[in-house]
Length: 124
Image 1 (tube, rainbow, N blue to C red):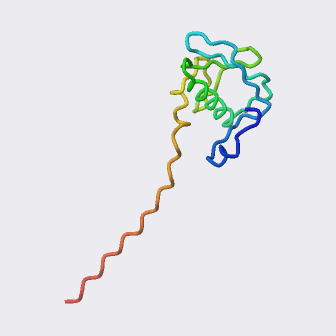
Image 2 (cartoon, rainbow, N blue to C red):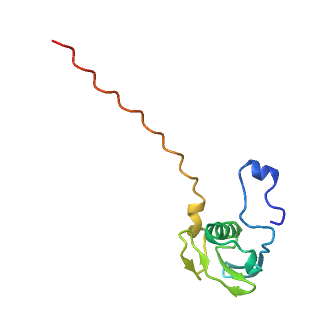
Image 3 (cartoon, rainbow, N blue to C red):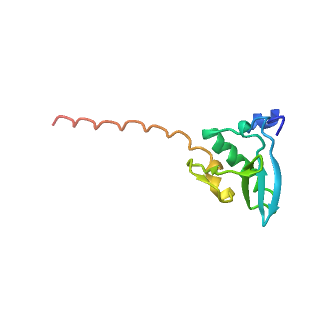
């Protein structure tokens, strides 16, 4: 992740919220749960960007055969990770937890054309 998205990835509108300062390392893989260390706490994004970063890490890690869930640590210490709604959890994180990040945003709804007004009745 050091270099960020390539030109082709950017063209495909792929991006990352993880800065080059974030150094991820897998410190353990037990019972299909990968423990991923984020390195320095100051490099980890927060708020909405933090939730997107966690989603990116979890969805990427769980796409690897043999990894069903992720635990996050910072400098070796377990952390509570944000779920999409902002709640914090210390439970292992799964792709299902972040499925909402895989759904394309809804296209804007087209405004319906005003219905034609009823034509006045012809005089009798």
